[in-house]
Length: 228
Image (cartoon, rainbow, N blue to C red):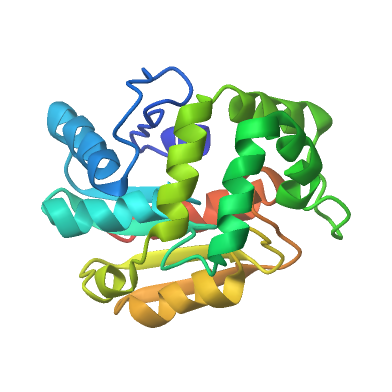
């Protein structure tokens, strides 16, 4: 956001309900409501000509926003390590993951953080303090929200919605993303969205905004400037 703002753009972000500084109402963690939350923000600020960026599960919120509210306010979208169009999750494995969250969410985070950051990949060096900040963010999520959002994300299928997207799309994806695999998420999204461009980051996992920041900054800025 800082890079975009310093380059002349207005950069706006918000915390999903149950996350960060947003309230935890204890409900509304399905994609329709989350997309409506986004619509309320865009309508409230009366934003137009937007480059809408969604990371991970946020890609589903972008897709659902467009299918529910249209593209009147949106000029283009960027999907970063997005889980759309569909996660290939075995139902039993999904249920086991949710049970693990209920009993030991912190332990799951501790065991999977390195995989998310891409520890050990060539050139994928993230400062320890930035890793710790990301973990604090994950641990700050309401457990109810973490469970419900994860369940919604595992159930969701955005194949049809991606086919109907009419704005240009930039898809940025790491080739070592264990949580949103390149072939079934990034590359499949590029196949489905009519006007799309896929950029694959070498030796990147699920957090390229930390591990490949300069490249991501440059790609987002160039894409956003295309609407000028």
